[in-house]
Amino acid sequence: MKQTTIFLFGYCFLCAVFHQGCSKQEISLSSQMSLKNSDVDFQGTAFGLHPIVNNPIAKIIIKSKDSNIDDRLFEMLDDENTFVVAHVLLSYRYKIERENSVESWDGLKVEILADNEEVIDSRQRAELKKMWAKRLSKR
Image 1 (cartoon, rainbow, N blue to C red):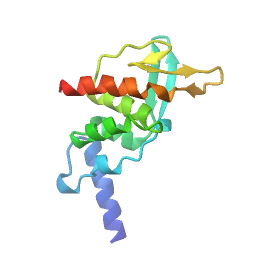
Image 2: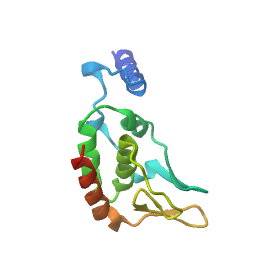
Image 3: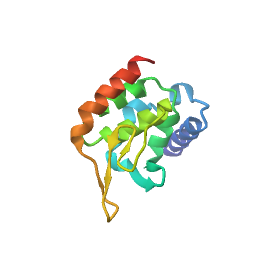
């Protein structure tokens, strides 16, 4: 039984990755999202900041067609531990034309210190939430 469960999970994982869907056995991503801000790292480039998503589930979420995910990501904007990853995933899901600079990425201000430590002020949450409320109301 354990091998069957692992096989089904692996199969559904692959289905989600390749956009083939898994009907009722598909992973319910919106209920199993255990994401945190540390799942995204920012890299400074000549073209501005670039987020790097380093969580395999987050990469699946970007491509998922599950409409419940957007609502869950929108809720996650309120939490200081998840607002960064939620913002990045929403931006990637909607392929928003982003304004990038060495100090911000799609409205998110990020400071990268000399030791590559990232400083992101959680007081940005309200402004990001307002921005996403406006964007999502147009969908």
